[in-house]
Image (tube, rainbow, N blue to C red; front, side, top):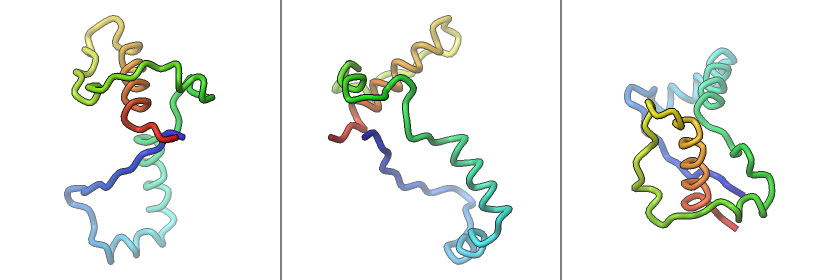
Amino acid sequence: MLHLHALLWLSGAPSTERLEELLQMEVFLDRFHTFLCSNLRASIDGINTMEDLDAVPTHADVAYSQPPNPSSPTYEDGGVTLEHAVACTKQRHK
């Protein structure tokens, strides 16, 4: 299953004690949920089976690849292709 391991430090983030208080507040939890849903996801479109996963080409140096050019007419497709390659090469666990 594809999944992320991450540890983030956010500039200006509340202290641990304040964060514990904020996490008890529904309005903060709603904002936190919205932030997570806007920035993270646990699946990749088109990858539904192990066969789908195995069909995505992997590249050892994909982490050093340049992102697609935003002004390119194939920008959207290039982003999807790169996303698949990075996830399947660097975040793949069996």
